[in-house]
Length: 177
Image (cartoon, rainbow, N blue to C red):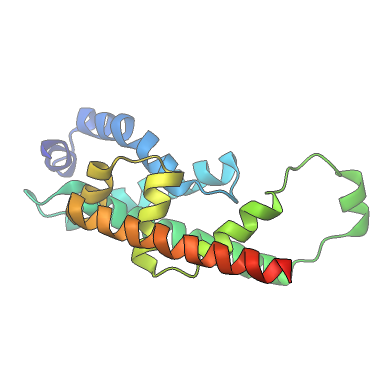
């Protein structure tokens, strides 16, 4: 992508165009079922800062989306780790819970269960499921972002869906006993 090369050379117009073109796709990628819009926006800003700092590591002529989505993936992982670390040390006050009841919507139990099952998949399959189903990326966009082929993405998705069906059936069967 020539825009990235122009960005490396300090072209302000190229920066604006990259941000305009890629921000919606990156926001969808960084958003998840358990995250707020504010958190996704924070991660997007962090991602652009990281991209800016690492712009000289991009090799001209190489595909830009795998490079960008690798940085986005690390941004998402680091944000998750930060949140987990904070949540492990914080305790909710009873007063705050009752004062704000109903103001924050929590994911449905079935959503939580589904994402627990997704977490049991291999990382590459989890990533493909998130990109296709949560971020809404196409097969082609997902292939470019992961640095693989459309066929490989289809195969990972197929295997992930098959494994999820098995896990859901086992989960449902265990719940009925």
